[in-house]
Length: 342
Image (tube, rainbow, N blue to C red; front, side, top):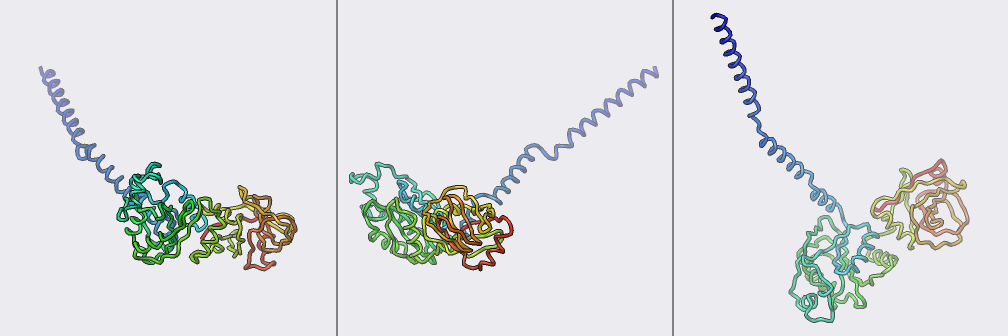
């Protein structure tokens, strides 16, 4: 009988101990439920996105730009000219996007009932712009548009009336089949009521870069000869660049990001390197001097520290170094040159 009582007591003790342990184990994680954990994680991720959001990064980059090219182009013709101007100046290109895009039917010149015809015949119409355009930090603005019915499109009025151009030099340009810029630039300047507006210029869609380059220099706002920089290893040199199509194309190559070229010594008088692509060429029999920069065979850039006679296309000349300095810089092993825009 005593053995039976002892066995019953042992079983009761085991049951009580096991139940207590399970209750404790179940109660422990109740202080942080899965729902709470997911909410905290989502909140943390939201905070991270807010702190390093791409829109803020883009705005910071935009604020550093002093030259902008802003263009409205319904068919792409004016945008093509704007892209060339942006490449030549190193400016950021921003397109005015209409909230309601223009169709081919909208632009039918021969139909008096089309959207563009009605807008151009209604001076107070202001088509809505879909995208926000910031001019923060801008000091020079190239403003491009097509000529519609002898005027700028009404969406340009929307743009200029919704921005403050104080402290900005505005340089209008337009494209058309034959019509001149007319009074469209003066009208936009009057509507803007702020900014320093220069006389605008009309270009065909196929305008060559040499013509645009000359126009940009005439505006006095940007000196393209100083916009293309050349460094040899870690030494920046001053270059008097030629005004030709080869240099224009070189500027285009360096506009997106600095162009780095691995050079090699050759002949005891030059460093030569491949550009990775061909440039327009106009080879002329030339006797080079120390400091001359030329294009050889269309796709190789050559910097001289001595003299040679061959058919080259001239690109420029280093003006701030003597022949002895050029020899010290280039005659002691292969170098790397970097071409970049200001």
